[in-house]
Length: 457
Image (cartoon, rainbow, N blue to C red; front, top):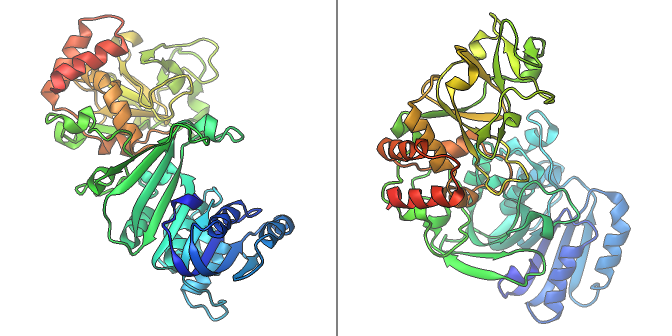
C-alpha cells in the first residue's frame, strides 16, 4: 500500500484514519526514510478511537520522531470530527487539507437513524457502512491532487445501497490503481472474510484517465500481475448505476466481444425480483412438510448445483406454506421460472447458479411460494415460456457470465439489482439455448460453455 503512492516531495500532511497500532503509517514512513519520498517534512494525524491501542501506536510512531516528523494521536470519533471540520462547526478543531492518506477503515453497517448517519448527511454524504464513510470523509479532506490509498471491501462496487457513495467518489476523485486479491482465504486467513478486499488508490480532483489493475492470489504477491485499462472498462459510460468493474484479463471477455449480448432484461420483457415470502413475518403459516391446504415453499436449500429437490425431509427450513387470505398475495401462479440464490454456497465455484422451476414437480399445484433468499425471473409475477426459462438458466450458468459478474461483484451475495444491470442475449438466442438444453441430460460445464460460444459468435 505504501508503495502505491507516486514519488513526491515538499510538505506531507498524512492522515491515517483507524490507525490501530500504526502499521500502515510505519510502512509509509519507512518508504520515506529509505528515499522513496523526498518530503522535507511529514505531519501525521493518526485517528484511533480505541484508547487501549494508543500506547502501542505511540510506541510505533516513536521510532520516527526525529528530524522533520511530527505526529498527533487523536482519540476522537473520526466521523464526527471530520464532519465538524468540513461543516465548519463552531467547536471544530482546525484540520489541514491532507496531501496523503493511508487507511484500513473499520467495517460495520451504519443504521439509517444513527448519529453517524445523521452527521454524514449534514455534509451531503449518504452511505451505509463505516468503511465507505471513512473513505468519503478522507476524500473530502484531501487537498487538490491529494493521494489516498485504502484497503476496503469490494461491496461498494455494485448494488443500490452504495450508489450515492460511488457518485460521491467518482465526482471528486480519479481512480488510479486497484489491486485485487484473487483468494479470500489466503490473503485474509485470520478472518472470516465473506467478500473480497480491494486496495485502491485515489487522486483528489484528478482528471480521470486509464486505471492500473493489479492482482495477486495472496499477500505474498508472488504472482503479482498488472495491466492498464481504459476507464470505460472500469465504469461504463451508459451505466446509470455507475457499477465499478475490476477486469481480470486485458482481453475483452466473451460477453464484451459478443455483438448479440447487449440487451437488458427490460428489453426482453423479463423481470427479476427477490422472493416475496419473508418467513419470519409469515411464521405461523409455515409447515415442515406439504399437507392439506398448503402449497410448495422454495428455499435456497432446495437447490444444489443447478438442480432442484422438493420436498426434502429433515430440512431445517419448511417445505410448505398454507394458502389462505394472509398468504395469497405473496404467492406466484404455478409456471416455469428461473431462480438464482441470493447467496452462493462455499462449495460452488460460480457466483451465479441458476435453476429451472418445472411445474410438473409439484403434482398439479396451482401456486407456489419463493422465499426471500431467492431471486426469481418472471413475467409480471407469472411464469415464462419453458424454452426461454431453460435458455436463461443455461446462459446464467456459463463461465462467461461468472467472469463478467465477478468484475463488479466481490462478495457472496447476488442481488436482483446486479442481475438487472447485466447484459443478456435476445429472446431468440435464449430460446435456442433452451431448446438445445431440453434435448440433453446431465449438462456439463464444458457443454454449456461450448454451446454458448456457438450462439454468441
